[in-house]
Image (cartoon, rainbow, N blue to C red; front, top):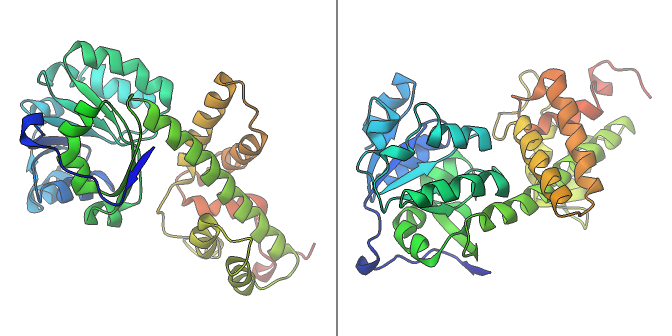
Length: 317
């Protein structure tokens, strides 16, 4: 596994991309497209006209359809919801795969699981299109600043071709293997830990609340000692807002972990590896989703375990 603070650029002999199509200019797509426009020709498409207008203002050339955006582009950057959407975008009724030029490269930045990606790789390779498996972590602000954490699985040639895109987006890039799917594998392991850590943080703060502890002081004490974790420090303060009017700002939707922990479970079963802790965390996120919290920030998981706080009129346990 090769990890560097910043990716290195490819040489001209490796024909690096100079133009990239970005399909979907939403919360992550638009800042990524904006960042890429500082060094590349960026072609964008979104079904919302307002997003196309914003993209135009930020140096992105808008197109009326996904197919038009992809035509002639050296690369296609995809940030899809799941494997089904990946399949549809590429090979559905209005799929863009047939519009990709031979020699183009597709960069997948989403977490869809190994099997979902492998299912499309052979079909793209038959069209002469390389795939760079590059699931990322960060958020809109970090995407716009080129400060994303990216793990990559791809052949050396495909990585070299995609280097200008990766250079602009990633502050830290980890090459985990030479096969598309290796990036998904590592991201699956990453999401197991992240999901479990969020669930554990919610469980700990729910217990602290039911014991009558001041949650701000509790969180301060926990994050200063051995119990600390990135997710406790990051989600903890947002969990304190879970019962406030409007809740926490949505930075990462709860239903993303429903999807990601589902991928973890599938991978663990396929590998014949027991993952009981991940399975327990998945059930908590599923409960949150069935209770209508799917579109809320994942810090709302606290409300699954502690629907009412004692200081909000709940009866003491």
